[in-house]
Length: 244
Length: 225
Image 1 (cartoon, rainbow over the protein chains, first blue to last red):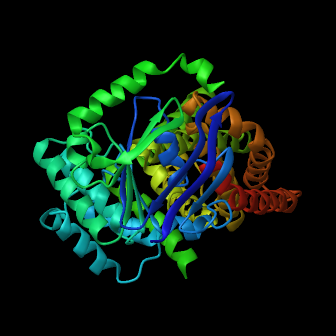
Image 2 (spheres, each protein chain N blue to C red):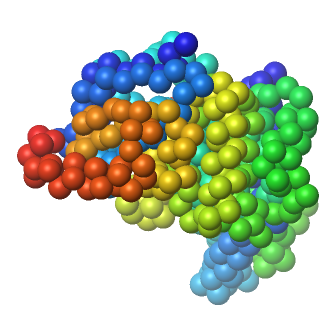
């Protein structure tokens, strides 16, 4: 399998504070990995580097076999990013938002792609409505349609389930699972373990900026992983000391 | 091809969003008009020479109203982390800059025409004053202002002070442009005067080229850091 993400000794610091330290990790196409850890564990920092919003302070990061510092545009063209915020413009309609991103990614057959993704996310009936009238669940589905518009090889998601009701979570999980089956590599940070464990392959546990564990997702159930994470977080020493 | 497609996408999105919200235009025009009215009351146009009052009134209105407009535009891009969508796209950073600059030119250009229309009434301007040189100065001044402002608006949004930061950064850099715009406009409004106008126009053109080039090259760094 192709290595979509290859990190060696990956570090990120903000001033004297190490947000992520010495991470060795790989992700392959068609794989889904859930990033777990308490708040401040370094999950968002890792995701920011994977979607090129932040640069590594040290170490080596290869995305799709390329160095994002040397070939940023080619790397970005193959990444889809879903953040806690939607990255959408409320004043535009669903279709206009996707048209805008299609322009930024210079996509061919754009209208066809937009129709396909809106249909997949169950939003085709609302494609001419402004996003400001959308519910949180609809916005999140549109955000996923935006991230998938260019058929990325790597999908990076930061807390995609936040604010969604149970059916919304189920729909989103189903859509992500289907992308994984199509060969997309997925990495996501979430606290909603029950939604992701059934279809994720692996779990990467971070604590105080360091990788502390990597295991199969089905090694524990959601309650078991929750209890395990609590134990890990409680076992950590003073964060300031660990990160110095 | 892809470069101009990005420029078009950014311009289309900004213009469409503004057409629906109208917040940048309204803020710009309201503040600009109020500034002109304040000048009318502070300096009675019937007792002062036109060339002493109008250039200061117009350019103060344009520059300060422009700060509000730029802040509004940058604030809109920060909403829902919309800017991150631009950063994580493979789009050429220079094209993003050019798209934003063009959109700002459209907003500010339309707003300036409205403010100018009111100034014509208040300051009794006519065809003798509104010459091609007058409009050349308006265009060059606006381009220079936005060439710098488009970059600094993003910088301002990334600092803790946000809206306050933009004028602090912008106005010192714009001093030569403001001086040239005011002096050039004063020469045009002075009956029979023409001396030095060419130099002010040249200065403004040079300012525009220099800061548009800098903005084009640096916009990516500003966006990403």
